[in-house]
Length: 357
Image (cartoon, rainbow, N blue to C red):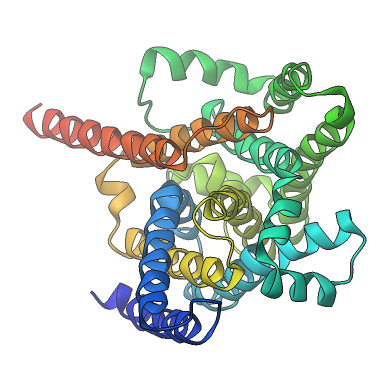
């Protein structure tokens, strides 16, 4: 319970703010509006957790290689960036750049005319989906082609794909092929800008890895040491420090895109969206620390696999949505949960077989 104490306090504060906002703002401000806003905030929080639980597992696979200082920084500075940066300022920035408006003008538009603001943001859903989808696809592919994994969930598939991991840039190659296929389903008027957004997703992923390598100064000795400790390639790339911190923040940003876009299907009030998603983001970070300190990833050997398969599914869903195909958020969330549950069941079965042998 101690891992979620701050999240609970944070949630109570956010719910209190949302209750005040509903009671005092809007054309139907009052007691009924307050209860409605509280319900929407709670729904958004649950949606964010369901969409990002696999994010918590991947975060934990990275954080288990960090010291206490960086874990604390991830929970403090990281949550500020996640809540205010990715779930409030970034959507405002997108609208500001595309509509040639200042941040102050966009903020006023979001508060005074949320419907118009959401329409302007949704008009660029394809670019957002292409960027986030390509980044997440690379996260999944690099895990899939990792030839240093200790265990294979789908052994017949992963063992063969791991052999391809020796081919340099195989993940980037496949991502570019997927992006080219995606381009054929995008209208001519927006094809170039969507393609560029997808390319930027690839560039940012590779760029973060490069920054992490330069800042951490990974040497061959470090890699050999981590291999002996059973670390995965993901942990080797981002074992702690500024590079790893950037990696997790961009990963969180890619997850937040889907949550922010989905939130506008429930409400156009940016304050309520930020509060609801903030509660969810805080619980995801608490779950991350819980998974690390309890050694859950070691106890459930396929949990990390399930999370990455969920990320791969989310990446494909995001990319498909960029072509205009609408996939309900509940489906997106359930796919991720299904992979996690499947992985847990497989892990329990594996442990029983190991104990009996």
